Length: 159
Image (tube, rainbow, N blue to C red; front, side, top):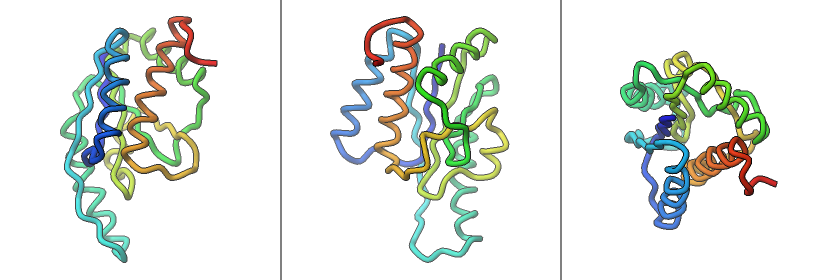
């Protein structure tokens, strides 16, 4: 399986980068996982709705450029479906059973994902209604993908 995590912005703190690198290393025995970062737009406080849409559109265009034609696209979005770890593992297994071996997870910027990106997505998932920093969310997503593979291989980790 080939997994892309396409996200807006860069990891700034070394400890987040180190933690993400650790999960990428752990995942390497199960799948080819690549982290692709696209530049974020400046989003000052007190922007109008139109300005917010412009920011999301600019970031969204960069995300769309990174998606490969055959990718099964999963948008990480607050309006997405909430799944347990077991359900997420079963979801990934179902994609593999369908022959969908190229999966792209999309993480938007501070304002979320553009309409164009959400339209391109095959589905949307949500990790709950809480707000997380983009750096922490990347780490959480990698950890959940790792947990899914451990579940699918009936290996200890998930309790």
